[in-house]
Amino acid sequence: MNNPVQSLYNWYRSTLRNPKYRWWLILGTALYVISPIDIAPDFIPIIGQIDDVVIVTLLVSEVSQLLIDRIKAKQDRSVVATADGVRTADTVDINAVEID
Image (tube, rainbow, N blue to C red; front, side, top):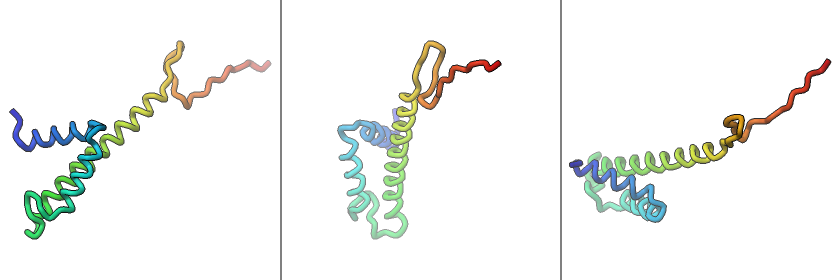
């Protein structure tokens, strides 16, 4: 069985990857970071900011991973399969002619 931190991370990640709930989770994360009411109150020096930093780091890493996956998917779609093999959209076919 997963520990609570791993379970929370898995829930956050899967919810963020669901397009239906993505913006709600981003908005909720932003409100949590801005709000003075959280796990460790912000008026406690250093400890109060640690949970905010962890949440922001988690959000930034997951959103950046989503963007990287989207860019890779676009690059994969630009690959065109041909009878001769695989070529990318940037490939230019040239028929060479011998000059005597």
